[in-house]
Length: 389
Image (cartoon, rainbow, N blue to C red):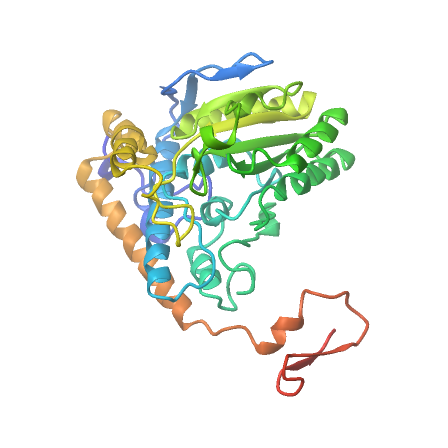
């Protein structure tokens, strides 16, 4: 049945949905069985089934949320080129299936910590578009009060602990969160995400070793987009089978362009981690943009390579084909949904542009321990000063 024949009542899965989207959502939860595009490849464990249970509601929400993520990142690209976003900025377009599939398999009690390509992870955790663009433009209503920027998104009430700029340093922190979860008997897990470029970091192996010794509920997720900055994985890693890198720790290689493969793998990994300790997931994915905004992304790979991935493996197109093949929506209805998404993004940007910058005194907050009453000064020692709380 097409969207026009579905109920207008909404039910969210991964994040609060806009009022404009409510009329598109079905409450039909009749199971739909979908087979993953590729089999899982396992190390020291039996792979999960390729058959994944879904529903009309989930398929449509996947399409809508991934399309929103894609549009948000394209808009961020434009804002950066217009110099409304400054500093570093790393975009996630092409990798949306990892964020949406992971979120569908877990709860907000489960923690996520990642590196600096974090906008879509924040959105998947329930963050708002307005908070995204406000933070990107350094405005005070941003998710980190305008002081973190692109690389330091944060949402503690949804167990999202950033957004980290030091390559690989988030993995030991994630294992620390997993230790706290086990210590507190929370029956929750932590997903510590990193890229193939960070996979050779020594601190990653140190954290994995202690996690395995203590059977911590830590899931290390390697988002392998095949290029660490401008360096192809084969130039940097003697063994690019990242899911095997744990040696004594089980691993699973996953098609990271297939949201349902990611969902199945994350569900499997959570069950494993709660019973047996850490596991590594290697998500075989791809980024369309360069590493950051200073990287055109075309000097170390061909345009044919990028367009080939778009045509054959694009994660949103894959979901779109499933929606159409199950007669859940028409082409026109999906185009209408995309128009509403474009308007939602434009409205969030306009609102964020009107948001003021943080007060100069905010330079001194969230830095030192509270309660000392110390006075701090800016470089001129006159105009910018604040008494620390």
